[in-house]
Length: 370
Image (tube, rainbow, N blue to C red; front, side):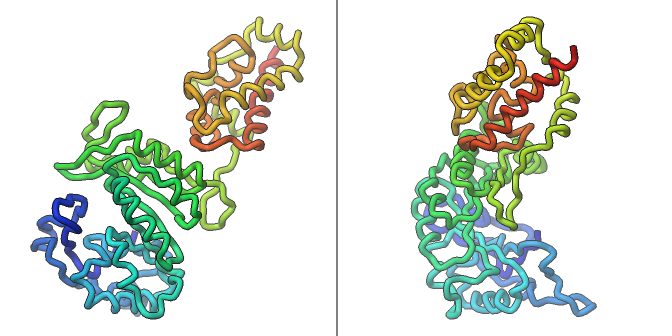
C-alpha cells in the first residue's frame, strides 16, 4: 500500500474531539503533530529512481494520501494546489484521500475538477452516528467520481443504510481504535454495519479489531500485531456478486469439491442417515423429501436474519435435518463459511435451489452406500 504524506500534523477539528488520532506528539518526526508541516516526500508522485522511472507505479495499487494528516486541513491550503497538479499529471495512479473534513471539500478542489477525476477517490470518516449524519450527506452531494465511507475508529453503532441505497458509495470499512487509551469497539456494531452493506450490495471490510474489542459482553485486550489478523479471521469482510469487473464475485462452490471438503471435516462427516431415516424416505419417496427440503430452506434459512439462526435446525427427526448438518446448510453462518453465501441478505431463488440440490445430492449418496 503506497502512502504519500505531503505534510504531517493535523489540528483537532473541534474542542474536546479525541477522534483525530494524529493529533499527538509524533516522535517519528520529532515535533508536535498538531503543527502542520511539509515533508520531504511532498513531491513523491513525481520522484524517480536512478533508472529514470517513477517510484510510484500503478501496479503498486492505490496511493493513500495524507495518512499522517488530513488533506483538507486549513493549514495546508497554500500547498494543496500543487498536490492536485501532481495527481492530474499522474493520471495513471489511483489516489485515495481519507478525510474528516469533507465539509471543506468544495472550497479546496481545483478549477478543472468538474464532476470529479477518475483517478481520485474520496473517503469520508464517520466514527459515530452524529458524524455519519453530518458528513455522509455532504460526501453524496459533492461532485466526486468515487466515494468511500470508513468508520475508523468505530465508536458506536451506526445506521447508514439510507445513504448506501443511493448507490453512490462504492465501499465501506470499519475498525476499532488502537493505542493505550483506545475506546472499545463492539462486535455487534461491526455486524450491524456489515448487515446494512450486504443488504445494499456494497462491499464491506472489517479492517481491525482495535486494542479493546467487545464480543458478547466480554472485553478482549488485543495486541497491536494481532488486530488486523483477528479482524480478517472473523470472515466479516464481504464482496457482493455484482458482476462488476473491479469487484470480487462470490460463486457457489463446485459440488464435488464441496463434498471432498465436507468429508475432511470430523464434525460434518459424522452425520449419516439412520435406519429410521431410510425407512421414512422409502415410504414417502424422494419427491416429497425434496418438497420438505424446499420448505425448510424457505422458512428457516432464506430470511435476511432468520429467527434463532444457528439453532433453527434440529440434529435429528427428519432426513433433511441430518443432511443440513452434514452439508453445512443448517444456518446462515455455516452457509457463508462453507458455501460462500453471505449472511445478512435474503437468499435468491438460485441460492435456495442450490441448497436444495446439495441436500438431495447428499441424501442420495447416503442411500447409495447400502
